[in-house]
Image (cartoon, rainbow, N blue to C red; front, side, top):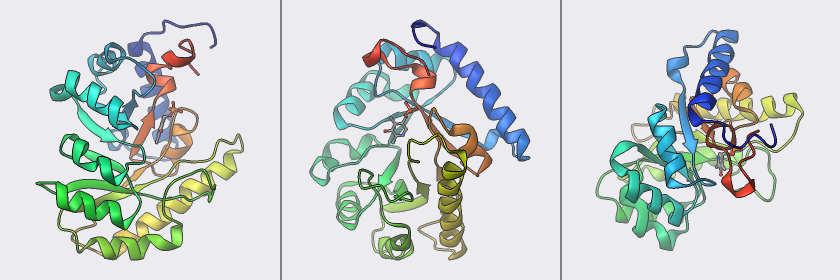
Amino acid sequence: MKGVNIVSVKDNVAIINENISKACKAVDRDPNEITVIAVTKYVSIDRAKEAIDAGVVNLGENRKEGFLDKHQALGEEATWHFIGSLQSRKVKEVIEEIDILHSLDRKSLAKEINKRREQPLSCFVQVNVSGEESKHGLAPEEVLDFVKMAEAYGNIRIIGLMTMAPHVEDEEKLRAVFRKLRALRDEVQAQGFAHAPCDFLSMGMSNDYEIAIEEGATHIRIGTSLVGNESNGGDNR
Ligand SMILES: *Cc1c(COP(=O)(O)O)cnc(C)c1O
């Protein structure tokens, strides 16, 4: 839809909700199991506010600065997800404002969060399922040991696993990535760890959220299709 810059967030939300319903129906899931996170990293505070007004009250940012700007302006009105890689030295500046972290990917980060948080933080462990070098996250075979290790940190609560699928058109490749994350989630869940209920799967973005839902996603992270991208002239894929 190049050139159509001023699609309202409300209209996008209606389309996305419709697509979520269809995907859920296809695999006999309840749409209420799906949490939509509006990823606002490419848009203004006003546009993020539009998402909240359209009923999407979960917002996600991937950088400290953008996160703090939006949080300062809209803090009370939303639940705050940090979805980008977080440097240990920046933890103390943002950690109390984060409701859910999607990018726990190393011991040093767990240790720093544990030290800085007053209360336990709900975290997704990020997994690099596709093995692309450009992507953050643990290798699949490291996940179980990592989760066990995190038991030592009382302020880390592992609520699920997160991944970013590769940018490919091949639907079967995407499904394979999502399935692998789900199988890993099931494996962690089966351990019955008190600190790691691991009920959730954060996977699916603008291009692949319907497939992710069919494969079990509970949290989908949508930027471009929901709020657009003001840094590329509003292109709305
Ligand atoms: C940017 C981003 C998204 C959203 O991407 P879109 O393709 O714009 O929907 C989701 N997850 C993460 C981790 C991101 O950085």
